[in-house]
Image 1 (cartoon, rainbow, N blue to C red):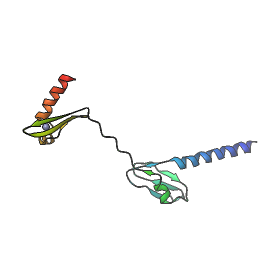
Image 2: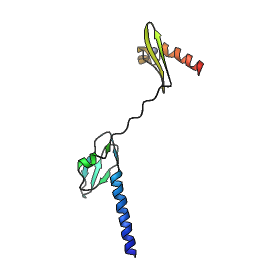
Image 3: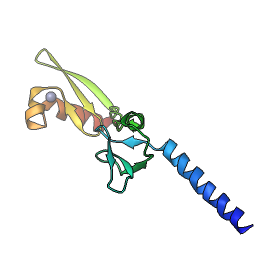
Image 4: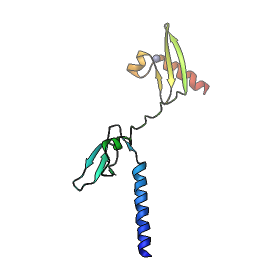
Length: 126
Ligand SMILES: [Zn+2]
């Protein structure tokens, strides 16, 4: 009776372990490698990801199939965009997480007259 219980418990642990082996993902910008420890245990290692123990019969191809590059965050949608014409040139002033302008002055000084104009207009409205 007790033996049966121990066996079913062991089987459950084994099954759970198998399930974990199936479902894990290696998320890293760099490809994983297989590392065989001196104790005979095999590990999948990738930078930025925890070491994951893998079955001894796994090849690098099995490990590669579990590899995913981290997803890039979605670019921030601008809240406000305005085209400004100044001295016959067009510039785009944008408010996303910060204000920005496409002109050369903004690139060097992080501020410009277009941006100041649009900002003033924007804060009057909203
Ligand atoms: Zn500008």
